[in-house]
Image (cartoon, rainbow, N blue to C red; front, top):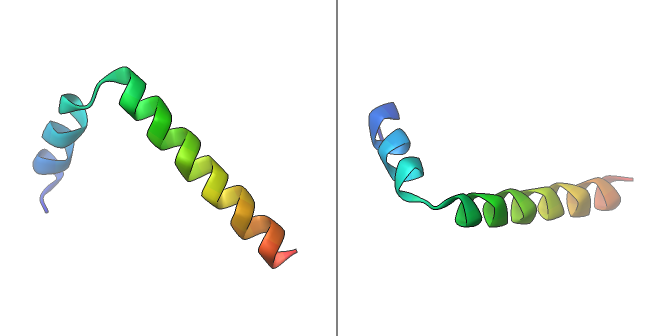
Length: 37
């Protein structure tokens, strides 16, 4: 997928959806850290 395609896809997302994605990614990273610890 080209960078332009990714940008277009991101622009289509609403701010709320972007925030939800960030929360999900953050939760996954926290889980990975606790597993690694």
